[in-house]
Structure formats: C-alpha cells, structure tokens
Length: 173
Image (tube, rainbow, N blue to C red):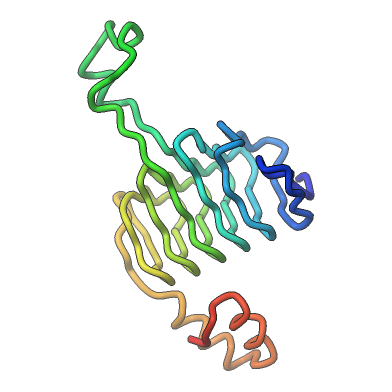
C-alpha cells in the first residue's frame, strides 16, 4: 500500500492510499479527494472522466469503468479494430460521492453516479444514478437500504463522533 497520491493537477494528497497493485487508466482525467483508499488489484478507468470524492473506500478486485465496448465488438466482429468511430461503444463519466464505500469485486459501469455516503455491496454490478446514502446490492444492483439508519445507531453509541460525521455530511442522520 502506498501512502500519498499525486493527482493529475499536481496536488499531493497525503492521506490517500493507493495499492501498488491497483491500475489507473488516464490518471490525468481522475478527480480524486484526499482520505481515499483504493484496494489491491482494483482497476480505475478514468478515460472518460472519473470523480472519487473525499473519504471514499474502493475494495479489493473492484472495477470502475467509464467505457464499455462489448456491444460494439459483437456488432462489428472482426471489423471492430478497423473502425475509428464505433456505434454501441458506450462512454460516460462515473462519479462516486464523498465517503462512499464500494465493496470488493464490485463492478461500477459507465454513467454511474453514487451519492455521498453510499455503500455498494461486494460483488455488485452498478449502473445508474443513486441518491445520497444509498445501500446497493445485486447484479444488477438495486437500492436495498439507507446508510443513515446504521449511522444513527452508531452515533447514539458514540455521540462524541457526531461532530466528525456532521463535518462531511452537513447534518446528522
């Protein structure tokens, strides 16, 4: 695990941890906050824009993709490599809101937008737009809960942490 990350704009993020086995495609198009963790053997495809908010955690063996060629390859067959502008080649920015968690072996597909404080369960396949604090699970992933419910329970047990929670969330659950 490597502590500290230099963003594409040259800013050093001292509290961001990026595994030495993680791969970042197009790092110049990666917008990333500090206090982020990227797990071992994860792939971050920032080719068409990837934004990872402060405090996010991306689990081991996770893929976050901003392009998808599988439909175009099937349509073009052997001609795929000869065509410069391809139909059915899907590209879109991915946004992962602050203090979200993406579990191990999850796949996040082009165009996905996760609100802040979201949780993606391990092995989920995520595509679409989801609100703040969404708990997602499944293939395809669906919203199955809200992280504020558990957060409220934990904050009742540890009220001294409320000030820290409120600093990023803006309010208490």
